Length: 305
Image (cartoon, rainbow, N blue to C red):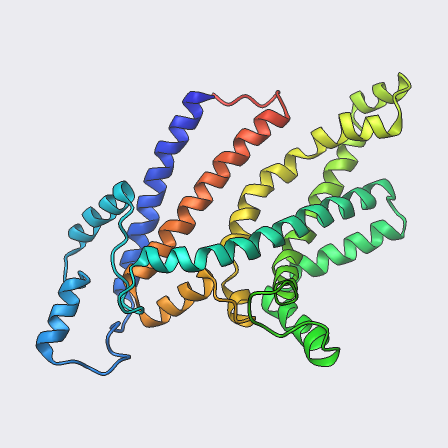
């Protein structure tokens, strides 16, 4: 296990560096200048600004800078926010995205597992049909369609929830539901299929033949084995929820890191875009590592060398 974790951490550093480098090259290939959207300063001041932010540096200098960032965590100043560093922006906005993503993940996990269990236990009956229809709709519809429909129904027509903003639970509810529905639907499908496969396993029939109660079979035998696909999906789902809230944050006017990332891309704020990509990539690789370890703990048959 220790060798596996160490090897994965070394691989993660390589992945983070490659993602960082590719993102930088894409940004440099994109036309535009981060200073053109503002009042154009004199040539001497413009040259000093570009020198300060390293926009005239060659590619190898940026690659060396990437290694320094990974080693020391110094992301440098940001262009879009005067007198702010990239770390200052991330510290002030990332907790908002974490709060939104955490609530969305809890909703998706609890309701998805419950819906999948209901669909498998009542196979062929109306709970199974309802779970299947909801899963297909949730997976097929993009978040901006789901969010727009919820806004029109619950904010404009019924006026139950506010249409945007941040600070109260009522403002958090609609974006959290919007972000959770696609993952909820996928978890429900995974849970239903895994539970149906596990129900036909020999150890389940053996436990029933020994007279083990239904609740004990469900909690001690069925769920631990049926949860492996869900745990495997949990890492990418967590990273997807935390990093995929760009559209939702923009739609509901939430001051999170996703909206900052979109604005930074539009303004071509290279340091801020690279810093945000670095945070999201690190989060993704660490969550995938955590899921691999959880799967090994949940099922001892999985050996991590």
